[in-house]
Image 1 (cartoon, rainbow, N blue to C red):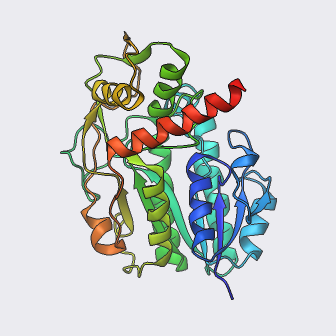
Image 2 (image 1 turned 90 degrees about the horizontal axis):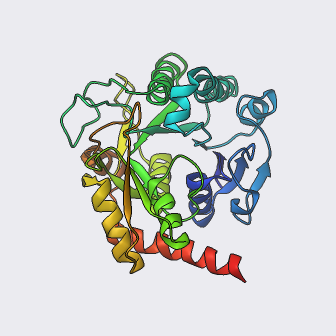
Length: 321
């Protein structure tokens, strides 16, 4: 019998890649997405699609009765700036929706391993050394980071008290094909869109803020690794939490220049005022994921940016026909 995987947010950018890798490795895959930001055409062929909200009774019933071996929970409100302007909405989706699924997994007999897409870019804050390790203090700068950290605390509770197998993957800045170039999240996709449409790339602040850019296919592999790895007994919040990144720090200005090289373009850069709630430095240590999950990034930033620009260039070419 094939193992079964449920991917929430599986019509979205990262979730669709996670659903694909499960299918490629012999899983039966169900996808839950309310299509608020996901796209139906991103759901891979072979996956069963359920148009549901993660906070709904129907989504809870699917988790409770589905007998899934693993649940990769990626559905979320992902815009840090929206969380700043509307923290109640952010908490309702990111905390309330996650709790709905966790409680359903518990009610279903705690059979499913619950792999949560957390954040290594927003959970630690600006007052820790970089590259940041999992057990360093957490002091999120935004309601988005606070919500992700809250869910990790709930997961530790469900693991210790109810025996649920929980894993938190703390992503750094994920980029790659299918990212939304018109939203507020995803600077690589936004820059690709600007280059291809002949508009300047907008850099907020002085452009010296740094990020750890990890390719989406590497993130999908991390979900598969977390689904299959032997887990340590849950002791503290950080026991089953893993940074997923590259441990390489890149400024936004450097990123813009690397994309101009990948595109063979001379697109100008324009500066804009810094944004509230934005971290100044973010890069994660990934040694623990290598040691305990057998995962490490494979795709270099130059190769990933080239592949991402190529994807968007092909999209633009198709739209022009």
